[in-house]
Image (cartoon, rainbow, N blue to C red; front, side, top):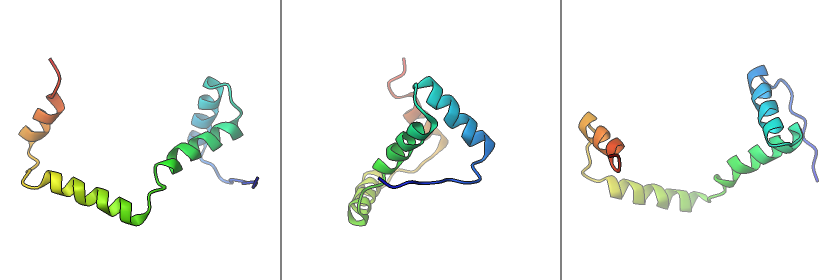
Length: 80
């Protein structure tokens, strides 16, 4: 396994990582690895797959104009 040293971590980020580690009963190292894995797991798509996903999304939005009314309607969908 590789070793990674991270320098100059901003205090706010370090505090957040420390709090999260305590809540989950992990070491700071284990929490950092967990956080990196969760972020990077979502980014493992290859470029072609990502582009295809973007194309499908754009096709789905064809003809939709984002107005304040549209945003409010979408936000309120499923609300009573």
